Image (tube, rainbow, N blue to C red):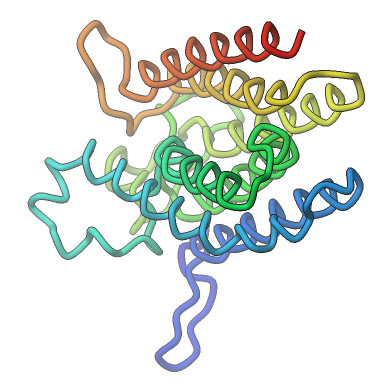
Length: 253
């Protein structure tokens, strides 16, 4: 794992930040290709990149800071240091969705159709971003005696928390799951469906996968009842998404 890829004078390139940028670029490229292929407002994808990126980063950081205030309250100087990690996928989506909705309302575009085009690209971006988490040594798993365990080096969150012992590579597991979910959405897109089907399916697939993977995460916050914060929010997300899916199906049936 390499938190810092290279330094050139005063410039330091962090693997987490670079992979995050690549995730945005790859996800945008896939969404743009799909928009052109479907001939549905491809320029809107390019227009939205900056808005969604800013809103997503703010939401991702705000989520992380709020749910980890016990740390950031003692280290306020770390709140803006997003290049070191500490961005929540769930928070990024929460920040980005209202911006996409605002944009579609402003320009008279069907929100659900555009969101359906973007959904597979979002998963691709998340998968690439998780590779950045792996190189950064954050979002780490629980100790394991299995052969697939990864020992993270010093100066990483994983090493600071659990030392030099093999950990479940939850970052790679989630990246693989995101790619699998992306493939499922692309396959489902070949069949006739109603506007919003892929979007709501994205939320359901990601939420269920995240719920399961959280059992192997070692850095997540616990809530009452033994469940983790991310698991509770994932269950709520899946239930709401399923309800919205059924509503859209009836409305377009």
